[in-house]
Every structure is written in structure tokens, then in C-alpha cells.
Length: 350
Ligand code: SF4
Image (cartoon, rainbow, N blue to C red; front, side, top):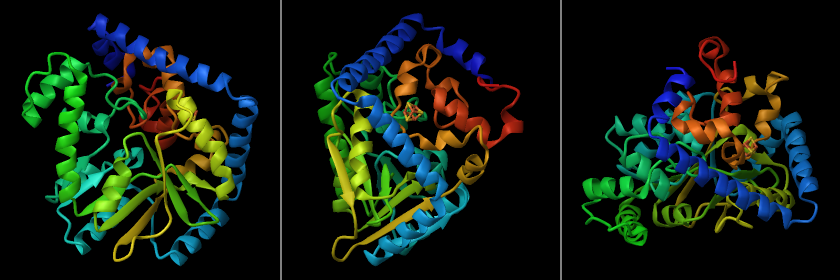
């Protein structure tokens, strides 16, 4: 179905469209205020882009360096050329641990690879533990935004959803009640999980460690309670050295939500004693994207979501009107890069 058709469906509820538009513009304004407080903000952005350009021009070397250092730290490293290989590798690790219950913190890569339905078809329970992700998972929908996955849901809709799936009482428009019930529900899932899966925001070549940014601490909770940690990353997540992290951490949270930093920037450098840590490094079309001069710069993206909050088309058509896991302006660049022929006819950017 084309973007225009899906956007028309979203536009039937005008009040919701107006609210969605305003909510995202509010986040964009927070980003502006926060960015303007940083002296040399534009220089910082340029620096981040230059570091990414260096990474992409030397990606093979940095990836090999990262793998060697991660292995030295006792981490198992796996390579996947596509989504199917990624899912098969993750499943093999779960089988090795006889894992039937998995908690997952937010990872757009695992969404891109459709990991949840793959594992669920094998009888494995996969629980998304980021609150927004859990809401869309209960609603059997994909995320509609890369930072605010349930931004298209009103609190009244979440109330009804929780009553149905979590057995909550009507919330009387009290979001604190809904959050505390979600916390109880998720706490139980964390305690019973066999394995924790996380995404990766940054992978540092010269240490072999990965950094996962969350506001809810759910990555830490999952990893520290489970007997094994699987971190899934795209090949473009590499940064050369730990000292470069300061550039990206300052850019990421401010651009995403206007926060000076995400509440948790968790460093995972080696497995805990008696536990296992795995990293799955995934290509899934990125090398091809890198080879196309017009698409190459899209791999600089650090997934902050600011282009979605800025774009009037995204704000007034909703994330589900796009045809790819990552919606909005950057999704409209990634998506045709995946399959130019398939998407040429109905894509927003074509
Ligand atoms: S392309 Fe969009 S999501 Fe990616 S870094 Fe730029 S503003 Fe953020």
C-alpha cells in the first residue's frame, strides 16, 4: 500500500493528527533549546559527521579491530550478512542455553530483521522491555517512531490495552498508575528471563566494548539478571576510539529529546563472571548502501529521530504510513536503498 493511502487512513482522525503533530513538534523545540545551550553545537555536529565519514572509509579495518578486541575481552563475535543469518545465529545461541524466555531492550536492528516473529514461531517468549516498545508489542503493531515507538497511542488507548493484557483497572486518566503497573509486569519478566538481547548505539573499535543508551535502565536490568547477553549491531555502529563517545553521546540525547544525556549510557565490555556475552554484527544491505554515492551519507545516521520530529509530512501522516522499519525522512532514504525496483512505484521519495 502506498504512503499516500496509509497517510489518508491516519488522517481520518483529525484530532489525533493534530495531537501527534503538536507532540512531536514539542520534542523538536526541546531539542532546539537544548542544542542552543551548547557552545559550538554546529561544530560538534560536523565533528560527529567527520568521524562517521572516517569510519565508513575504513570500515573493514575498524570492524576487524573491534572483533579482535571484543574476543580478547571474552566476548563471542558472530557475523551475519542478512536478516535470516542474524535470526539463525540468535536462535542458535538461545538453543545452546535452552532459553525459552527472552527480554529485549530497544533495537531497531532486530525490528528490521523481524526477530520477534522468527523466535515466537519457535516457541520462545520475547518481551520488549522499553515501555513504548512493550505497548506496541501488546497492540501487535510495529514501532511508529525510532525513539518514541508508541507516540501514535493516546493514554486512553494504552489504558484499554493494559486492561486487556495486564488486567489493570481503569486508570481514570492517571498515567502514573499505568507506568507503575507496567513496571510490575516487566519486573516479573526480567526475573524469569533466560537471555537478554540488546541493541547497540556505539561499538568502540579500540576497546571491543559496546554502549547501549536507554532512559529506563531496561538494558542493564535484563543483562544483569539473565545468564547470557546477545548484543545485535549494524556494521555502521562502529566508532574508532572511546574518546569519540563524548561527541556522539552529547549529540544523541539532545537531538532526540532535548535531554543533555540519556539516563543510562551503559558500557558492556566483557561478560560477567560465569555468564556469556555475544555480539552479532549485521550487514543486511548496508555494504550495498555504502557503495552507492547518493546513499552513503545515510550511514552517518545515529538514530536520534530528530528528522522525524522536524518533518511535517511525518508528523501529519504517522510512522506506520511508511513502508520500512525506520520511518520518516531517513527511512525514506534507507528504504529505497534496500530494493530500488520494488519501491520505485509507491515510495514517498521516488
Ligand atoms: S538522519 Fe534523522 S535519525 Fe538519523 S541522525 Fe539525522 S536526524 Fe537523527
